[in-house]
Amino acid sequence: QVKLVESGGGLVQPGGSLRLSCVASGTFREINGMGWYRQSPGKQRELVADITATGSTQYADFVRGRFTISVDNAKNMVFLQMSNLKPEDTAVYYCNADVLWYGGVWGQGTQVTVSS
Image (cartoon, rainbow, N blue to C red):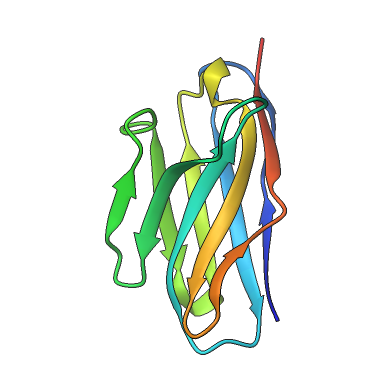
C-alpha cells in the first residue's frame, strides 16, 4: 500500500506565505510524478501544480507567479511554496502521486485558510 501525507497548512493573512509538504511512503518501484490539487466548498477539485520525475512543471493560471512546486526525489517528497496568498486560495489542498504499476494516490488533505 502507498500512502501520501500532507502537512504545512494553516491560517494566514492575505499576502502571506505557506509551504506545504507531502511525503510518499509504502512499497513502490517509482513515482512518475506528483502534484497539488485543491478543493473549496461547493467547487470541484482543481489542479494547482504538478511536476514530473524529471522536473517538468505546470501551473494553473490562478497561481502562476505566486506558487512554486518542487520535489526531493530521494525522500519521495513534493513541496508547494505559496506566496502572496489571496482569500480565494482558501481550500483543502491535496497531494497526488502517479505511482508506477500502482496508479493514482491521494493524501487526506491539509486546510489552507487565507483571511484577515
